[in-house]
Image 1 (cartoon, rainbow, N blue to C red):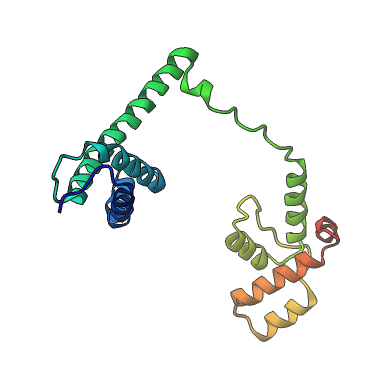
Image 2 (image 1 turned 180 degrees about the vertical axis):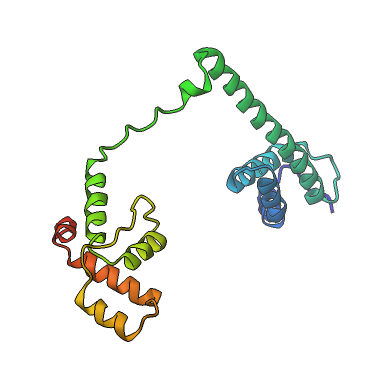
Length: 195
């Protein structure tokens, strides 16, 4: 069956079918060469429309011919995109004549750390009211390596009774709960929390 190059309905039907059938090939091409799928698809359609009037007379399988032309032209398209990028990069570097360090943004100004320092100092003071074992747990569990555990001036009454009854150390869950309760009750720590 010969295809007439002047018949627009057959041209439109064949090109539409080709776009649907070669979608997988175009997707793989776009993924392989880091291109947008829609851009590749539009270029394939444009290539088919430009190639249609140039189809050889008496061709029996126009789809196969168009498929081969599209593959070849897409490779040329990829090469032209790369060349355009190289030219634009060379132009930018020759115009500005600046180093890469000049092109990068300046680092952000460091924020005022007085509030953070105040929060850290307040939490450390609140931890000093805890038992040494609780302070050591807080240093280990919360990564508070700038805090040095110190034995409190006096032991809490509840802990004295606990130690008499059970001389073994307390579990991690008990230590965690105890640290949260004691630090959370501290008035300076409560003042830091939003209302």
